Image (tube, rainbow, N blue to C red; front, side, top):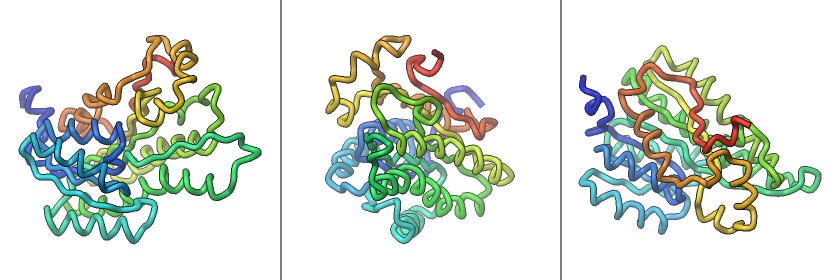
Length: 254
């Protein structure tokens, strides 16, 4: 098989959660550009509709599914909807996530629970629901969007729940990779560093400090994650599983 063919996703059926966010949008565009049909999942329907219009320009099929992926019933219904329409799911990208900044001694229990539910529990629920179809088909690609925050402790912001959720995402990736390798299901994660998104734009006062802590001396663009998601979704990565791919401008090397 040629290298070009290895990266093609024509005819593949993909599902991506957190599709309305900056990173989710870029990853869904990458999958669509390489030929995949994409089911967009988010709790914010208007944002998804805008992304869906962009994806349709690539000529593939697009579905929009509104769901709170931290709720098991909504996840099961969403997956059933996609399967009834397309028959299978070849690629799952768990990208849903929320931040939380607060000193640990002041954090409310509800805030802790919400971060863990959205960032970590949702990935387990979606992977579990989709994997049943992948197991039956004896193939599949699951890509979890973790963070360098699962490997290091960010400074100067205090975000214990977020860090723990992303560390959990990396271990979830490894655990599912070990369990499902026998079904030819590859489970990997991408750990971005600081990225320019709506959320980080809102805290511009931190940017200079983040740049100084990053060897490349800049903040990344979500579009710089496109190549990684295509690689992990394609046949090019068929012998990779359980790996966390850190894309952080060198932040974690120091």
